[in-house]
Length: 463
Image (tube, one colour):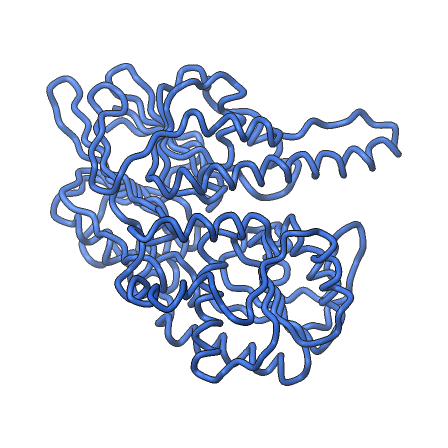
């Protein structure tokens, strides 16, 4: 058996791993690489393998850096099934349609400027119509159900506790009479996060492919992060400012609404309007309502009083573009949650553009930001920011709250890997930058796990 590390290898974004066994090929994840636009376009457009040779795809969850290049894979000739949990497949459908729309809009904008320079137009990576085609290939796998997806390879989905429908993937592989178990973590969630259940820890695996996004630092307790968020929001509203939050439409947006609902119930949030300005988040929230099988016990009990992450007195969902634009002309205090989570595309860029030069306002960063994104430049508190063809001088506050992350921190990652200390032959660290991988490697070696690798993109391992 051979594993090829084609994406999220020595970086966080663009997850994609190819497994060869019994003469067949299985692709774990098919994510979009997100970074500098020219590099991203080339890497996403050109696969390092022939898509026609891939027999099946298995997805851990719906985030675009894990599923976002499926339309392009199909355009290039893939015709097999795509396996994921039911909730993931429903989210993938709406997220890819949104991504296709964004790809078209970006190409249109780029071509407007290229036409002025008499340069040839570029094509979108894929279109919304391409994204619609993906749905016919999606196949549902329930948690704990085991399915043979290519000859000799049976997979089981277990709850990863990251977002709705997220899974770690337990692979049983039989080849030439030898049985091997590979555990692919996907994105590992955290205990005691609102709405969804805690992650399931690995067991009885020979090899572990594990994310290490926050391998260099533990997270604070979610309650501490909540209290910091309450403080930042209160200070901003007290000075009549806006709180503008770039947030992933799936997972993070619903958790933020849950937190604001709690603040209001506890008397810590005044009657200010809260806007979720994202058509994708609206569609995703509808899907959340349909999947109580993914909720933790606290959320199930709260459902009797209305959905705590979706239904809220102060909450307004904004789908109309003109209504979104009007938010930027208003000067009254408010909270705006909008996608994308790294502030690279979508309506959030305009909300930031109109908020960034007002000292009353706060840009609140609540998730990891990839290098070379607007979100990362904000998190670094740069004074001058280039967006939408203009340069802006930042006067608004920027606050970062890492403790709200849906990724496990260093302490939880160590615990996760140590579950396989007595059995795992090798741990492959993926989905993390060098500093994170180095720090986690050191922590694991101190605890007696020696065979830890940080594979480069394009590398392969025979196991």
